[in-house]
Every structure is written in structure tokens, then in C-alpha cells.
Figure 1 (cartoon, rainbow, N blue to C red):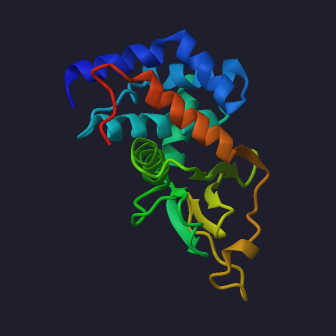
Figure 2 (figure 1 turned 135 degrees about the vertical axis):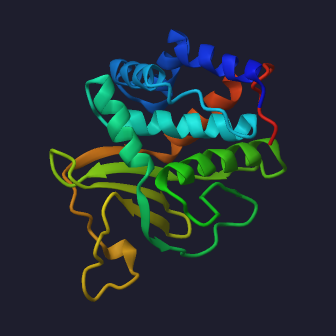
Length: 223
């Protein structure tokens, strides 16, 4: 990835127009989005420099979603909680049934490294489908970030796809599966008191915005 591409994304994230569009695409309060992206920029967590434009932008997109999902008010807290969310480990997965044929599957496909890397892969899969031959439709995926008490002692993440009943559950601490349900994760009720859920439509709109925002620039996607 070139330094020029890095500068393009730096200017993009600093743009008020881009941040306002993110708020609209995610159907969220404008100030929440602006403060979250500002905190990532101040902490120099975005833009990141990975091997390709697509991977770098996907990682930045995942960081933005987690910063917003932190629901914190100060820059330091936003960066800290976003990092905790991104590092969450996979606790269990339901494979479910295969999605309908002819529809692009953007659910994470590789072995999980962390919640953050899986959210980034979701965006990568979306762009691969959008730029490839599977353009007849997308199998929507929702992403949730939750906490178990008002202090966020334990944080949870969920990536779920209603088609095929597929789900991955993450947590900052090992989460004990209740006795009798073993791997039946769709019956597990997470002990949460609040959080944020990005609906499938919001994820698709956010991913499309990131893609379109770097088109015809040095940071354009090559997927």
C-alpha cells in the first residue's frame, strides 16, 4: 500500500462530509459518529497501513464500527473500549445451513483471530462480491457489540446471519456455556444490559460508502 493511498484515507476520515454520511448510513446520532472517528484519528488508530488498500480500508471500517459501538464520551475511553471490542475472542459458532445459492455470502469464512479481524473480513467479503460475479444479492449480516453491566466489565460481540442460522459469539472473558445447551448457541441468552446492533442494511450501506469514497483515488479497492 502506497503512502499516497494512506494520505487519501487520512483526508477522507477527517472530512466532515464523510463522517456525516457515515451517521446517515448507520442511522445514528451525528455527534456520536463524529466523536468516535475523531478519537480514532487522535489516537492514530486510523488510517492503518496493511498489505493492500482493501485490507487497510476494511480494518479502518471495523475500527470505526467498534469506536461507535463503544458508546463512550471521551476520546481516551472510546479508543480504549474500541480496542477491547476488537480483541474479543470467539467463544462459539453455529454453522447452520448454507445460504441460498446465487446470493453473495459475506459472513466471515476464515478461522477467527479476533472480533475485529472478523468484522474486517466481513467488509472484505462484501467488496469481493460487489466487484465480482455474485451481484444478484447479498446475504445480510448483523453485527452487535454488547456489555454485561453498566461498567462494561465483560464485553460481547455477535456476528449473525438469519439465512442459514449462522452466528459467531465473542467475549472479552471466557464465557461459560450453560449446562445442557452445549453448542446450541442460538439458545444461549447473553447476560447483557445494553449495546449497539448494526442491522444488515446498515452494514451493507456502510460498506458501500467506504468503497465509493475511495473510488478513482490512490486508495481505490482492488479485490
